[in-house]
Image (cartoon, rainbow, N blue to C red):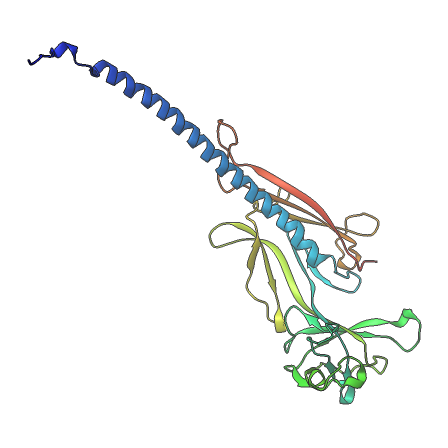
Length: 304
């Protein structure tokens, strides 16, 4: 026997119920999306702020490394302004293994020794046109006549013998790997074998604007006496201004007084100011550019 089920007894979802469910789902979805957007904005702003402060910290690591070894009384500072500095940058050290004929050339120990105790080390190997300071002990045993004398390398370095008898090398292979340098003038007789040598180049830091309009700290050096193009090394920073410059140098003598005399500089104060590349906000408020700054002091080791 068949039983008929009336249309009214069937269970289902009415149109009104479906609309209510859709509205609730839309509200919940909207809330979730709003939270996600807020989180994305927060993390993007946090990353932007972290990047800007990272640029500032890079400056506090970069500049002291190069500036601290400056000898102001020795003429290491060529020119200085509130947004740039030209100075003598050490790029290598060594010692005289052998004196050449006429004292116009010297032989250096090789940079790589099995003993790992070599005295020759450089960031980049010297080339013709580079400069070097060679220590002259003077005629007396007193330190008052000791002086670092500047010379220019006038020919490409060549291999030469640094004999094992000098104590700088231990094997025939090491002895044969010595480096011969020809210099611009004869050494005085008071510069003996074993004298220290410091290789240097002119280097330059300055605030500059790139072709894309960013204000960066730029750097170039002058290998072989020919200066390279400006290369950005940190930034972006605020543009130059007499009061709120992106990079500002101030120079002080040993008494703490501001000086414009390069040979009197005992310390260099640096202030760097940077602005985020995009507007930021860590809350749900309006977004704006964040400006931050960092100040540090570089005390020169070789000051008066």
